[in-house]
Image (cartoon, rainbow, N blue to C red; front, side, top):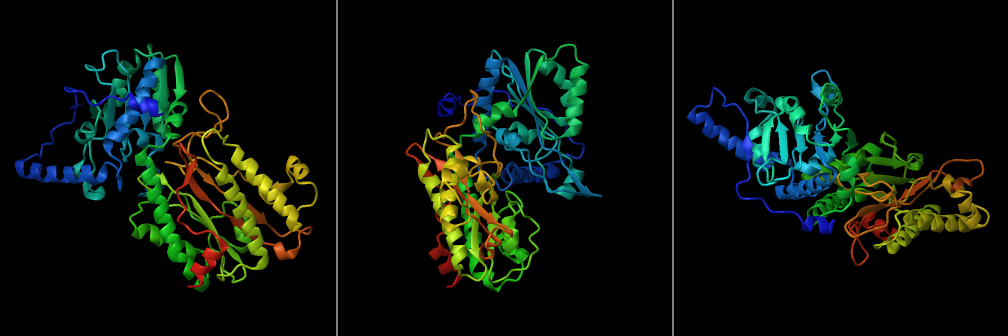
Length: 484
């Protein structure tokens, strides 16, 4: 990725930024002055809501993808996420599709990015953005929305065109290419229109490829700007959590804990969360993705909080498990320390060249040995691992990629089909856990202890950096914070 980025070119003198947008009939001088002010505000605040990533960051990404498309004799058509209705007259809060955002920074619906590599890059448009024209009447409801003119001002967007005209342009756009690389953004209407348009076209690419197959390898490596955004999301998550911990002994329900944490997110400027918060106490802490968050808190229980703010579309993913009373019981402390030992063993192993799957192998080994020592498993640890007996207590993977999506793209195999090995610029989570539910063959003293500890880790040239290292997690640190 570093080599690819170094090949990116700067904007060329004379590049066309041609736009197509009808002049509105109401465009008197005074209204135009007011509209210009509104447009300026929209460009500053709206191109990437809450976003601080520079717009040329998106141009560099498009240039990398264009180079790949050129080698494939392919054109890329990337659609925005669909606006989804929640119920009558009310939409779900809009969140742009991650690949579309990654390539454009555009955060509004009904948009298409077309990347069409040309033989003469200096004379023909290679990056075209189709977006809705501005609608002043609608903006009375929504507030200012950038349109075709603003899209044309984005770095290295050579041409911006009204979204309603996309299918008029499509046949001519795709005709020269052997391959179509496409993402419909989950918009079924657009997907159906594309299919119908291709079926009715005499000249169209013979190979259709999902865009994510190319983009996922780009997204796997984080730039300095992306790392900064992830760190900001983590810092907000950590600060909100630390404010909440001393309050927990006085709270009565899981949703009160959730409210305290999410208030911390919001007051620090977070527009949305990376995922629905998981706040489970007692038995609820033994369910991996429990999201009801309605249970009553009991002073003898643990509470597991899996939370993450989102900043500039990049997500944190942090889990901490603490005693509701502020003090761990003997059994809770033993399980907690075992999970922490497993996590730290994994983190210490992370460096370039280590296989992704190694994180899970190490965690399984530490946890299985520990469970034998505690009497929760019986037998030879190697045999127990081979027979997967540990899955009764530790049934999920230890790591996943982190970025624009909390479970970010990348998969388990690299572009050559080999299992991933860590390289500098990748970001992962490390989150082993132990979950003990009520069972006849388990001593009741262990029942309903659920512990997961999760941190976010950047692979560096030298080894790794724990991005969430400032969020306390030892038993002594947690008890000190909860008993000021």
